[in-house]
Length: 85
Image 1: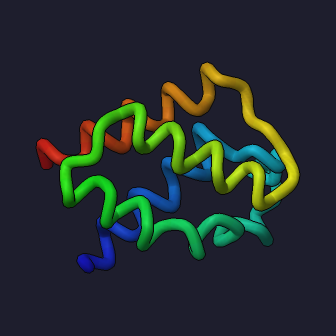
Image 2: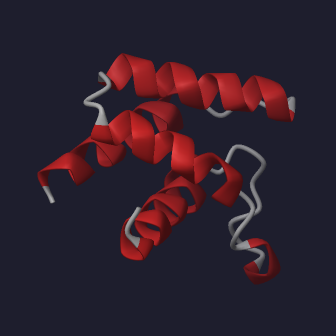
């Protein structure tokens, strides 16, 4: 896994999804790094937008929080666009 892809996905999760609203805290920039490898696998295997949204929602359940549907959709769309790069 390319290091720049890892950081790009981690930044997208923090900047757009951020279900626990820690994005303003620079000490927590790596809060969602544990979820990045799974997201990269989904992107690389060509998962649908719905599959990525469902995966994000499943992580939210694990965290005991819920992001808005619009944040989840926007994040999934941005993640899918990474395939083109």
